[in-house]
Length: 391
Image (cartoon, rainbow, N blue to C red):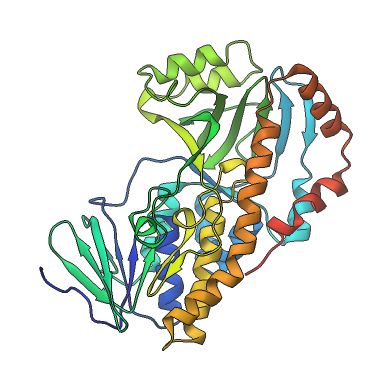
């Protein structure tokens, strides 16, 4: 069967992304031995930007890395929503939000965030090049069997292996992905804009007819941009000339949209179809549980995928600290705390996507009129349940 790499006192985390590294840090903080198994051969250097709203920043404070994130990332001190041709719809009251929430939101390059979390861990916590094949468990322990024949045995397995989670298939079975109706282009470039100088931070979104474009400072002089385009599943994912297609899709849009796309190397543009899953009421079975996108994949419209994984990590670590000898009871408590909140975020993210990706001109006009007349106080209160939340 291969060698056993850990004792039965070890917690096994499958997946070395933001969620897996966050929960490993949280578990080490409460004194648990933990090993993270990642199928990639190293931490990925390719990626996109990740937004860290106030609730994410508070989670990172508790993980002990918030100051490093603030140093490397970029604060969001400007956030606008505009029409496709540049007419202002919303000037988000980011300074008032920051005052109420105790911190600005930040944007950071995802691999930079992973590196920060990775470096906080004890040496040799993460084992690379380990692809999970299956899980076996009994009343006293649980085992992860890897493709190379290695076996890791512990008291708990945490599936933090993303939207296509192998651990989820074992616990829940096959549940269908739900296509969002749009495909996302994501790009990173060095680009300067007089309207959005680097010292200001933040950026804007422009909303059109079934299309939107976002632009934000990422730190280290970089810009992260994304585009969301309504399209039948499978239509855009196979394109070869990503940059040319993005330029065609946003031809004539408000500057600096075409300019920032034009400044981006083809190799720095990613194209992904965007999916979530219907929320489930339970994501644990015996000595196995799920975290982050493996448990509750959500659309990116509220920018909460990473934040919710971090919140999961802290809650699960606390539950295990409270019941160190009763792993299954700790997992049940973790679900009781987290399922209602993550279910709400999944649903609100999908609703927000429908609002952002409207195609009907009359519906768009009504939405834009509503946005233009919305008072700042309503904007802040509308999402206070989400952002002004401390685990």
